Image (cartoon, rainbow, N blue to C red; front, side, top):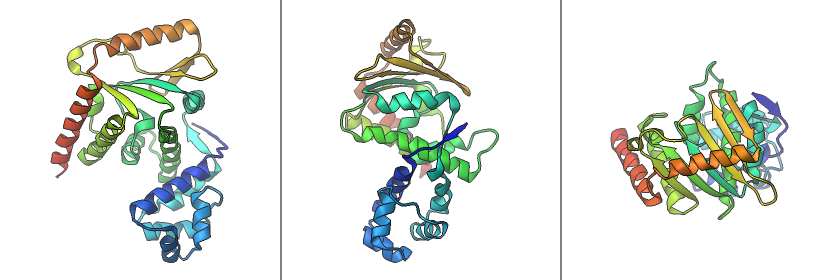
Length: 274
């Protein structure tokens, strides 16, 4: 893994604090009173302009019942941690106007919920510490901010049916993750298509593929396997990957059929969780 300066880390910290505060129905003033901090200080933290001290982070954890999350989150303000082979692809991902991705086993990182992503990180070997896990979560959740824009990037996501069936984190985590995908699909923020088991062998069986287009740069493709990844810019390779993607897409369910399948899987997990 590679660590380097990341000016976005404080913004990610602030975004997470604001999200959790709003989920609890608290105003900045109400949170400041409970945490014995000034409202302006809370505002500066949420805007990414200030870094809380360890004591302040512990108070925020106590108020929000975050089990030490905000204190462990502090080291992420000093840098980011992502797999070395993904560094270049991450930079391209943030600039892309169009992304077309195929996921064979896991929900793509940019679409993962916090609980799902944490469950994925907990499978790593050697095991990650809580601090390492939180640091990785900052980057992964921060990537999803590019979907806050209503249109850019336009994103097509093709999931192998195995993504829906593989129980990552248990039924409750899976239900929430699949509901998140359905929500993004229903809002047309992503176009979602599932490649069913019944399609049999297909052109993308060998691994994950992400095709990216840009406003003023030629397209690129990123392919990934276990602990490896490669970014291709050669036009002939990009075209081959695009052709393979289109070929597999021809065997996938439609957007509406896929949403129905994902919704049904989410309901099954919800029933199991209850």
